[in-house]
Image 1: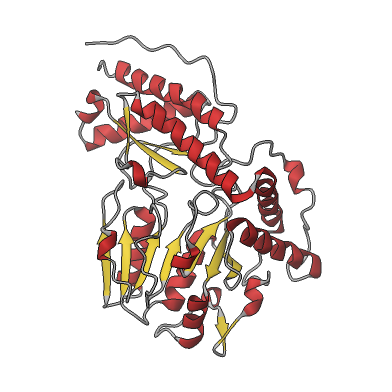
Image 2: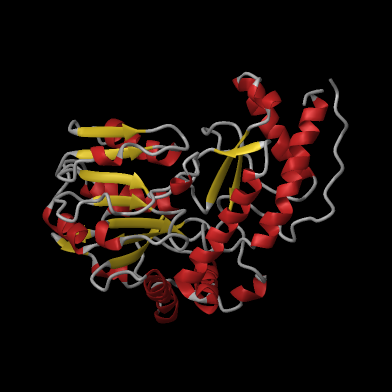
Length: 392
């Protein structure tokens, strides 16, 4: 039975950028914020190097990184930071990898198929769920994503991580840092990129190392060769310059200035507590809408593990559920395309490996008012696709 085409909502988001990376710029952002960029200068010169060191210093302070941790700027975004840790540190002990979305699955592939570590386990879970955390063996090294960027499920806390662990805990925190309270006492390697919660530009990663991680680097030599881009030691000693702004490769000083702008904005609004509160408010707005809605549902059904940054939704309408996998994928893409065509939401289709649905970035640079303005448009788009199909 046909249903009528719904009327369009009256209010549009002031900023339609809900991409999960690169993410929305901070409120009030303008290109003039980059006027202090030291363009045409060597990153090894005094002033540019000071800019890079300032990114490290401000990041440490906002996140509350312990004083005895190192923090450096590394190539290739969060992916590069994770790969540096995996290729430089793994192999000394058995490994447990928690795989519950596409990026953590990629780390499992690295461990099993690329590094070919024989004594490795993959603890897996479907999108929207977490593996059995109680099954982790902390005499092993542990590799995990703190937040599932493509699944909308996050590790809720660090209580399950053993204080007396003998292995390292390596946490990909690219979509968690600056939006979630990371328990550094329970972690040994933490990575992120500039492009997520603070809305910076891509291609640069951050690598934070605990003293235990530094000890591993300086006392263990992998059985495989390391390319220059991964090397953090020389002659058995840590390359300390990496953690004061002496980068392995040439960074973009324009992107560095952009990162500093985001960090200064974060400080100005109240630091980490304010950033977390903004992200949680975005999740709360979506949760309130979902609770009163029969069209959508969270991919992560357990509220305790729902991400406040990568908010992943499935379509719950009966007409959608009745379709086969290909039909669901086409319908979800059509919904996202309608929102983009209207200029109310860009880049919110579910990740290509995830179940068909939508993914709304709710990080700290996104205003809750824009989330609230978007949600009726999602209702409209779902009803529009249903009408096109002659469904209810």
